Length: 137
Length: 377
Image 1 (cartoon, helix red, strand yellow):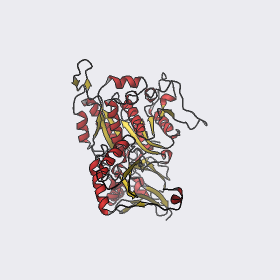
Image 2 (spheres, helix red, strand yellow; image 1 turned 120 degrees about the horizontal axis):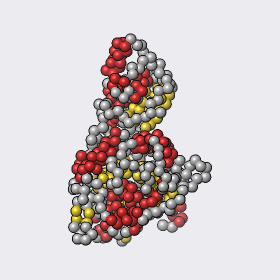
Image 3 (cartoon, chains in turn brown, yellow; image 1 turned 90 degrees about the vertical axis):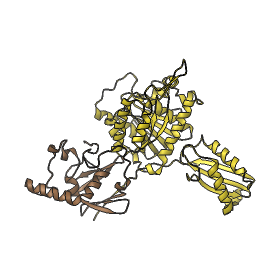
Image 4 (tube, helix red, strand yellow; image 1 turned 30 degrees about the horizontal axis):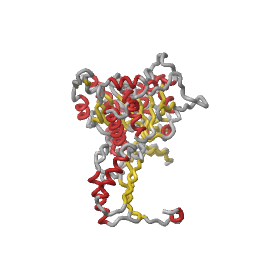
């Protein structure tokens, strides 16, 4: 199993003197098995739902992203992927195991926040990439 | 109060009149400023109850750090000041402490209230010596303390604590081990598993595996603080520890030298990346006093620790001199806080340890962890 530190090239990489941004740490993480939606509840009671497919194709794992941008592998055919396990990693992230045997994605609080914030844009971008690559969900 | 009265729940306890309460609180807040909390006991929310029984004034104080050292000082200061009010025949002050638990603690280590990583970017700045002295200071102040020696390649805690060579952790089932206890400190170290002379030639994954075993297979028991003596650098062991344990915070030891500070920045950034808060910085080997002429020299430069503390919006918990006694006593297996308890250096270690305890108890630093649930809808 390869687990790794949060990727430093996300928009919220470590910056000097950053205190933990508490509003970005969810208070509850609820996975709805049938609808395959991961619900994140934040301290201000706002909540956001991310589909397991969305999370799966945006996994920060090296198996998906590669070690350089040109090594990134396009993820497709994950329409029906389901989450089987979520474990805490230290106090900074969760690791999600999917039923397609992918279990190396470590999602930091910052990355989850970023995914939630850019949910629609990232999803459109993904659909566009699929289309150009001639693959299907 | 008699036994029967207590049994029947009859009590003479009475709240104070508003006027008296106001006066008492004012006196308390002026009489004593806690050096570690940095404020008076009323603002620190340490005074839990004020009541009177007949004409005796009772004050119950609960601190959030081990208070064996400050207890007599508090009692003395408050009772002296409250006597001048001339309102009560007698003043009884009770000082207890309740060390808060870091919320994110996981199952494996759930009986350990706070895990503190003592780290540095660079080797040889005195991490292990600092760790052992801080642990002893916390224990002396009334806390139950343990040390996990995470430097699997170069363990030094057994030697520093004067544990005789050949001592091994006891095990009944060969799966879990009891830590070795020295000077009331529970210790687990690779140095207790192999002899001092055996070099460990391990690649990263083996070292990671081993450190997990040292944590999970040790019967730590109930503990207020577990100090982790980290290896230098930012390697496999650091990542493993950050991922498997919910570390309450890290304290960084450094010399004021520029080259050491460079590495310290990397070390702090690593802990930042995994959301482990920085509890403070300890400047080690800051000054040297010449044993011949008493001239004080800043061997490794000045203001180094300060600049780091400012950069990371943290504080310097204390500054220790480069002193031959610290080294000699540590090498002899009797750390300076035990060998020379009344020395300035021992006092500095005590101050650092208690400031650290206060910082780790501050609720603002505790990272809340989410609850994970699965539902079928």
